[in-house]
Image (cartoon, rainbow, N blue to C red; front, side):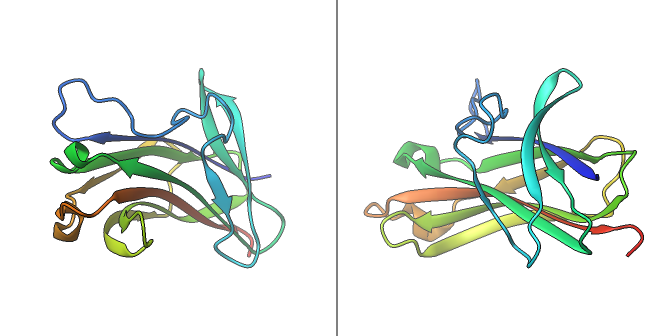
Amino acid sequence: AGMLWCTVHVAILGVPTPTTLLANAGFEDGLRGWDVSCVEERCGEVKVEAHEGSQVAALHGSADEWTAVQLQQRVLLQPEQLARPLVADASFRASPASWIAPLEMRLALSYEDAASGSLLGSCGVTRAELPAAWERLHVHCTPPPAALAPTCHVAVWVVLSFACVRSAA
């Protein structure tokens, strides 16, 4: 089976002692706090595994041509948390013994109006042809002007998307 490993951290930029805004950011409690959804016809399986001394989310591919899955978490923000940009970091690598050739990993932050669910703005970064060594995706996202309205209650979605294909396909 093929695997793609990932860890993620989201914090407010410029805070002297940054703490993650995510529940269960290090996957210490499995996938608690994370929504898992399919983004293609064939869904990959997501598990949490011990790897190199810590917990990581692991995408397990199937024998199908395409395997895709999305991990996401919604975080309600306090007004004072909108004064600075958010930063998201994800470390990732493909399993070196894998028959899967990862095509893409995307990390995104999407601001929404918490009451209506309307998208206010987003930032993201995509990496294709994932390497066998650990690499980092980094997103720096300034709150959009609409999020700063005094009557607006804001949430941010942290989204990790994986898309893979068998190397023989």
